[in-house]
Image (cartoon, rainbow, N blue to C red; front, side):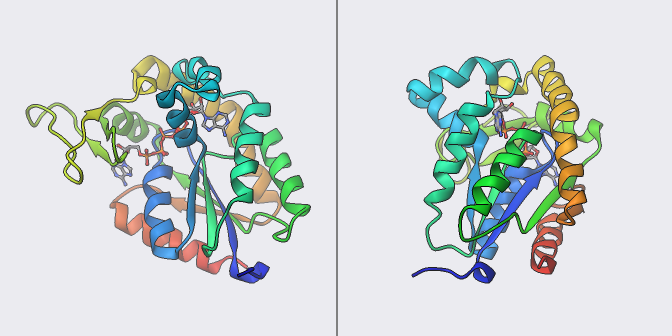
Length: 224
Ligand code: AP5
């Protein structure tokens, strides 16, 4: 089955580390029958496998730096070509600088979908970002995130699959501050890039996860 352009939406999620891009992309993708493509997850899976890509990207991720564009752009664009028959795709964590945004536009304009339909900017204040990242634990098997601030006894296993819970190495405070610095320098200009193209939808990323999901679903539905 081939999909006409109007049937398929290309959605970009923008936001600082800890804004809830991954959490929301998973929920919105399920609700709207879209594919969730996370550049960070793809890199973490490669690091876990210890393959060539993983060895190339590990040191960048560990110090909170961006992986070089030539690696990232090729990886994401290859995945975009395998989009399947869902109603759209959510790009979580890509593009993250202007070069990536321009490469994405160029690649899309050469195919049937032409452009990004909506860039959802999930905005959250910095103290909340730091609180979320410093208390984040993840299931090593199914990647479900949990918030644990140390006040409720020992960390237990994943409630969904029983997998071991762990903290991301780049959630150490020093690396979180570096990631925020990179975000303000390289990714904030991407928000302006989509604003100028009339495709930006800013969504308040504070409050209950389900309420935020509803705001994002509405923003995507309202896009052309
Ligand atoms: P990536 O994995 O993309 O990390 P990030 O952008 O720093 O984002 P996070 O995953 O930390 O946060 P999030 O916004 O997804 O929030 P989440 O939903 O998890 O990138 C990691 C690294 O990979 C980069 O540093 C770079 O090295 C490399 N990389 C990736 N993409 C790249 C690219 N395009 N170019 C170059 N390099 C790239 O939520 C965070 C926590 O908050 C969770 O514990 C969650 O449970 C909790 N939470 C979520 N929502 C709420 C809420 N409403 N209330 C309370 N808690 C909440």
